[in-house]
Image 1: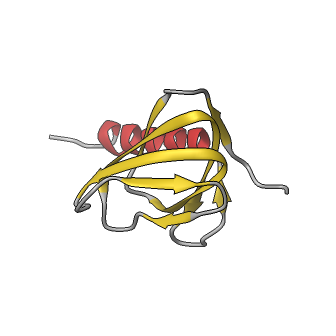
Image 2: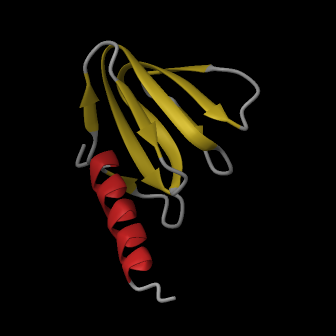
Length: 100
């Protein structure tokens, strides 16, 4: 498939930041909850969820599951861990360049 993704074992919880445009369940099923969302969502294999405008998105795997994070700007697959690492690095560099 050529898509970068992360595999979650049963019961594993992962937080997805606000930079993602959507998430895609490639395998298994995911329970998704987020601040700004009226209720929880069960995302089965093959389904995609738009998470733009939501904050504190929490994903939990029901059984072994695979999730891909799609970049909101280009709407392309992006590995969740790569995205989180880049986000943290950008916040660190913004903080370190701040002067009083």
